[in-house]
Image 1 (tube, rainbow, N blue to C red):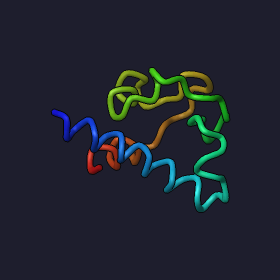
Image 2 (cartoon, one colour):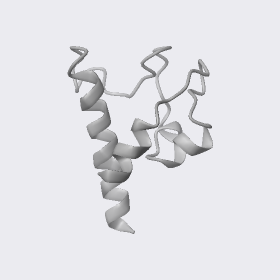
Image 3 (tube, helix red, strand yellow):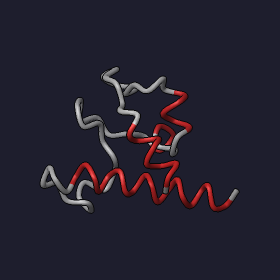
Image 4 (cartoon, rainbow, N blue to C red):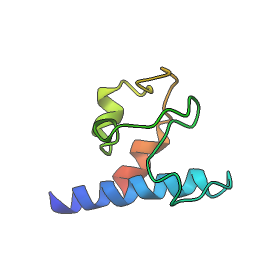
Length: 78
């Protein structure tokens, strides 16, 4: 169970790096995750690896834009 949690957290961080680096956005600033489309800050409870993606129906809580399946896939491989 602990390995799934650590893997999910690592995968979530990896997703941030995968998206931010090619878009020339620092991985340390902004510190909090944000929606790449609507740019709303993502609350901690909407940023739980895999679970939040499922609960939110693969959509951003704020702008309702789809969240790519890549996110839970990378989190599950982490």
